[in-house]
Length: 233
Image (cartoon, rainbow, N blue to C red; front, side, top):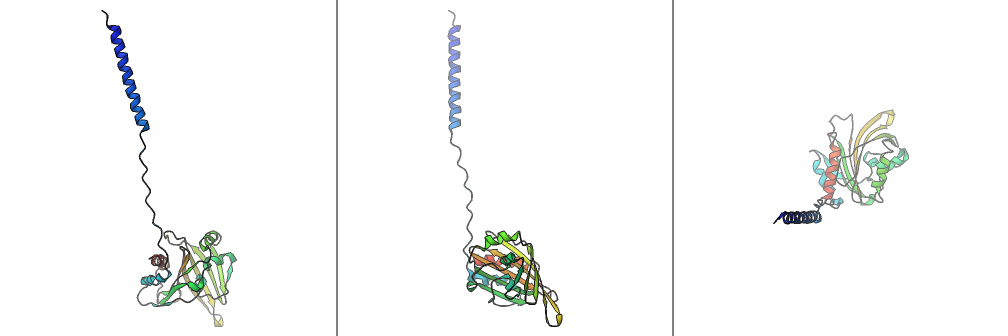
């Protein structure tokens, strides 16, 4: 008897079963759940600001500095020794050197020594000074401030990188006309950080004609970073 039809039927059945098994395997592969994505590492929030801790940043001062509490206005113009009222040109740039703060709640210190006068002060914002400063920075690369016999030219410079704190810097050259027409000059490096509801300002004011060398050019920038770290604990 010719068994070729039976063998052909058997081979077709084997191929059909193989195709069904392959299809089931592919379906199982396609329906397998995708692995869960790896969660992004949590970014810690900055520590709360405690203004009373600002005295800790005095540790960066060199030996031989005399430190006293800062009792002036919490503004850069006051740190430069300018009295009110100060005339700023362009007028809108005044917000960068004199942000809107609660002066009565300010904390700070001032230190004098052979390398210049260093100051650090922090005060609560009375409105969103950070947003206001951000809008003005592009419009105020350079401006002037005048108060009494003193005229200062201010040039904006980059501030240090500090986590969760917008910063900016100012380089100031001031000239004061004294009795007899004599002119004295001073230089200031000032840096500002906007923290969680606070404004922190530091400055190093030096006399270009002083017999002692000034502190390092990056002293004020480093002082801001150290002061913010102290305020955050």
